[in-house]
Image (spheres, rainbow, N blue to C red):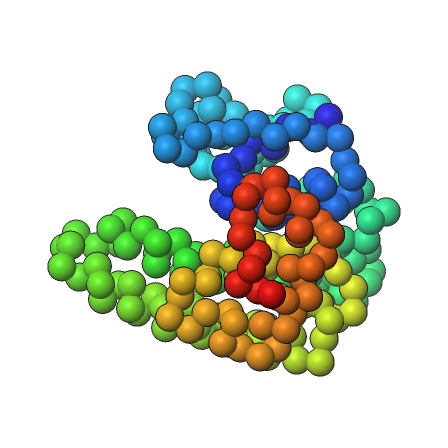
Length: 212
């Protein structure tokens, strides 16, 4: 059994999508961010970074959401959520997953935690405004990639799509949200109706109505 240490609508959402989609045997273990449980001594033994998520299986504790996603896909290749070795789409999978994590997610983190990036509280509104522009730029790149495609890599669903949906949900409050981009908005509407997305969002109490 897999154990996923999670918090609703957190970076654990993408691994949660994968566990559910692949019908794996898993247990959800809530890490209460409200009480800062991710910094507790017991949790830090599993995840020294003190962040969410952590996946535990066969005595191995793995952290960082993209790493967990790649591991799950490679452990269960029969579900086709990562292109096989030798497939020309495989490097593109890693390209887009890295872009989502290192660019879009990184910009979102600055936007939602601006106090970590300035020592002058008066500049926080400027940080937020600047980040809204940077996030919109990242979303525009994704919108262009989705033109004429059903999924991010083409016509086949991959873990990248679940990861993008997670970040798109976080991006809804941004001044120029994902729904301002025609290709991205249509893609998110379709994905919001996927059985895995609807089921997991129901479990985590995430409102999908903005996408519909």
